[in-house]
Length: 104
Image (cartoon, rainbow, N blue to C red):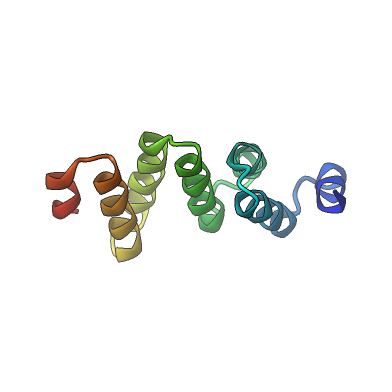
């Protein structure tokens, strides 16, 4: 409750938004986490941790295509980061797209 209030008063507090989103994800409330992260990313799209949490929120809601789009964008921006290719591959596997998963 207090984190939500703090974020309402100062929406640019990225650390508070990230913590709040993580708490919502841990509680199984991926939809609220997505809303918090979407607001943060509108103001601060460069925050990679927010993007990764957003992908997790999408996955938590069963929206694997949206999670995949986040990983694709991250991989496009930072092609040397193998973590994004791995996350993309795992998501493709969950989607039943094994040939693409193995290629990523």
